[in-house]
Image 1 (cartoon, rainbow, N blue to C red):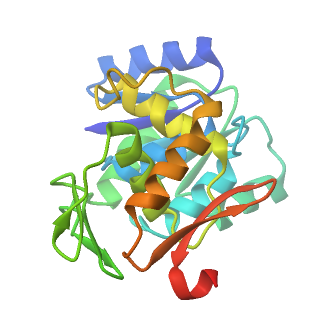
Image 2 (image 1 turned 180 degrees about the horizontal axis):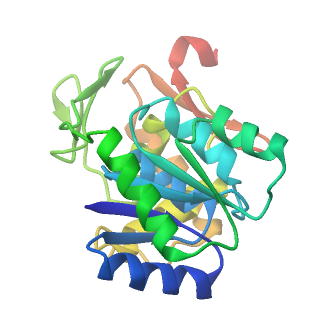
Length: 236
């Protein structure tokens, strides 16, 4: 069973990862909210354990965003807050269950298995996504405009993938660097393209803008916030 563990406390994350692996889970760890959202949007997990107090993007925001595309993913929320309002906020954001720190591991495992019993995760292949004259197939790692294949570097591919998955929403620079870093860690990175430095984002945005010309899509810079991929008519 594939599980995402989103927890910023390194000591707790290491301990939980070891215990969950011993219990039969294949665990992938996200140390902050930006990486957690990226991984949850791009990959198919049987369940997720999501800490509310994540840095960069808080857990509730991550959950609200992910729920739009993956309403059936079982999510267990971890939090140090035990107030009624906090529990209600977590459940309203889309959590399936709620566990307050500190907790005993047997309870976490039992709650996870209960969630999995109630929710049969059935990952489906990612269908090609067509926008304007752009055809984008994540599974085949192919993108084309009017049948003309786009030649994209690994960093450009990850950037386009992220912008498409968050289309019509502003993507922050922190999300882009987190996406690149996550791809590097999982072997899908950009050998030969150098470090995924924040200062390189503008360079890759410029390159991708040029390659998307004629697609009917534009990348708009939202000053002070990030970048927005939208239909060309909306950007005029």
